[in-house]
Image 1 (spheres, rainbow, N blue to C red):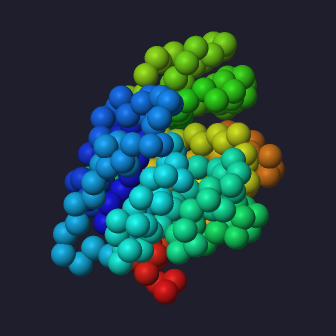
Image 2 (image 1 turned 30 degrees about the vertical axis):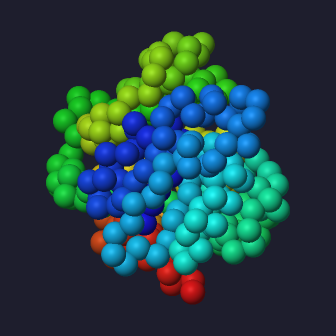
Length: 300
């Protein structure tokens, strides 16, 4: 099992994949290769000069390519070099277009975390996932309440044009008796957000999520697939505030645990003061990375 990530995300999630027992490789041999792809004559050079060569262990039968920065040439190279392996192209982000599907071998399987994109482009669906290596830590977190004098709501993520909406939400949370801790990469305008220039390691994100009472998930496309934040809330036993309406159909959805902006008729204060409920272990564990991998085989 090989995972190809773009160079920007590798430092964030690579340790989680490795600790979860999944073989992982960077897409490019070095960070300079992405820039080199724009040089004249690039497409006349062998693909092996630019892309990392997968290393398989006994029993590996598939290569999963994560979407960001993946090009038709990479997919075509993998198909030709390993004709006996399943090639799965996994969208972990919304699809900007379906042109890639028309430019790669027909045997490539296209999958997405978004039911909306699956319906639109004819992809196969698999859920969002959470890392197995964090299971023990998550179980411990669920048995202990965060020690905050007032409830704390946490958001960590890129700005992506949503800083204004997040600042408004932060003010609403303050009015509801909640302390907002919003950390946004790139400089936004607003009083209640913390400015960061770089993404923090995911291990730090996990530690901060464990210390919060509420996690905030705010998507630019409220009907897109679920992000990692609902998974963090699910496994760490935290309440969740989100604008993603798809969560209403999730098997772990409970109004006592999840507040959906634009759909919920309660006040934020009513939601915060409402006792949370336990999610069945078999429902929660269905989102582990190991079970996510199994679902690719269940479709055969």
